[in-house]
Length: 162
Image 1 (cartoon, one colour):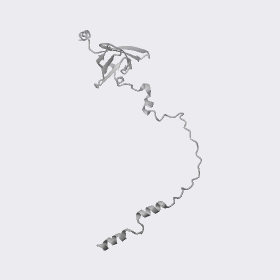
Image 2 (cartoon, rainbow, N blue to C red):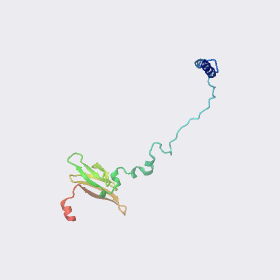
Image 3 (tube, one colour):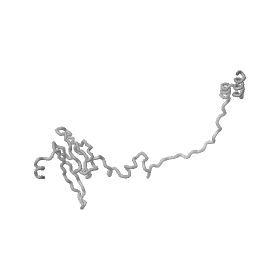
Image 4 (cartoon, rainbow, N blue to C red):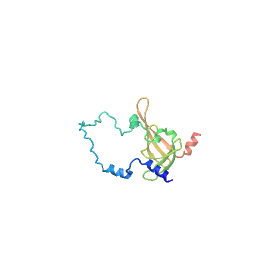
């Protein structure tokens, strides 16, 4: 058994210096300085942003423009598709809850833009939201139309319609 252990010991070590001693010897060697590199003249670079797109600006916004994009989800639908669900009035800033055809509700106040024709909410009453739409007719004339969105139909309107 002793012979096998000695044979293994002799086969493993080819050098007579231990690995830790070899590492110390390598660390003690002087390190040669890096070779000197000749200085290359560098041309000064300046960036000219003229006639170039801003890389931090949205590419999609550039395609559609700020005016053509839809600002709110309520501008995707016609006013006839929107439903007035609730009104908070009697405060300095009355609010209304409007539901789109998908069933999602949006809280709006006076001055908000709704509908495909970019109608503006002019007033919010106890039973009524008044929206003024301005659109261009076939003769290129701007026409303003007032659209009433009612919370509840009155009995007079129901009895006359049916």
